[in-house]
Image 1 (cartoon, rainbow, N blue to C red):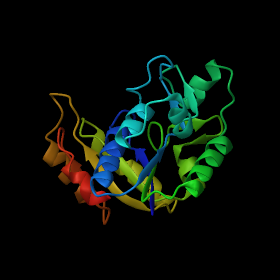
Image 2: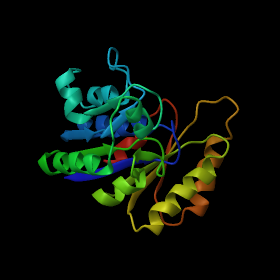
Image 3: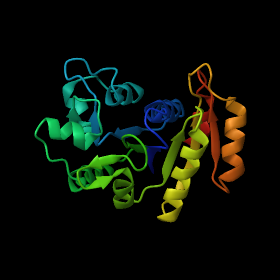
Length: 219
């Protein structure tokens, strides 16, 4: 059984895309899969099938029902803000202990060959009133898959995320560079090479748009 935390070097860099690709690749190998999204914001309660947890359920070949949604993502908030800011608008005092307890229970109960926990935003994005994504990662102690982009500035964001995790002793299973969709983004291959040049011994994986073949090597 393999359990991983999927985090980002920035917001909207493709964490859910990478997580879903890994889940599909594992299923293609005949492996059982599971995933958790402990807190999610910017979700429409009336139309959530294309939300992050909705996409995770589809990648796991689970039914898109409220019961399945509650099982993997019980803390959902409407405003497209950080989870604690969105929760505050709905009168919820979101605490890191609640996220940690939910994740630990889910991890302990799962017998899946591949179990993913997907964070929100970047490594240092607020996850609760009293903690960031890093705090949740430290509490769980799982190896991480760090997702970076290829937009202008992404190299610094990705290397900073790597150094932050290293400084706190958190293992990094891989860094996935997800190709950005902006037409004026820097050259993708050069971006991947630049991250690799400064990332040390960390495994760097290039995830080009429209190609999920890379995911098979991670599961």
